[in-house]
Amino acid sequence: MAEVRFKDFTLDAPEIKFAIAGENFDASPALSAVLLQQISDIVDAFTEDDKSATMIDKINKLIEFCDAILIGDDCKARFAKIAPTLDLQRQIMPLLYWLLEAYGLRPTEVSSDSSPTSPTETDGTTSTVGSSTEVTISTDSVPVSS
Image (cartoon, rainbow, N blue to C red):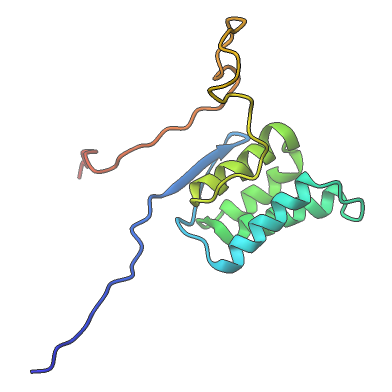
């Protein structure tokens, strides 16, 4: 009998979920090479002073990207509806950087001055003040009722 070589390339990636503007969204657990380039272009569009691209153009790029990664029947329409109301610095950029990290990419934002060589004295404010909460939920031990 001939030997058969088999390898399963099915991804067992964790789910990616986020909430913004009071709406919950599920995203694809993996990105294709085309989407990786697209997210890079979007981050560049929002971080560079591109005078040729208007804010509407940038928001449309973000909507187009989210349209490609969001999972669910109505999530794309819900995201497109709230996208123009989102705050650039406090919602859009943190979302993009968080998605980069969730997809295993390094964020491109400038690192903070929290290296071990920085001064250790503080004014009493912790580094987590004002930060958003990220929670990992395991569904392995959640009881299911019938």
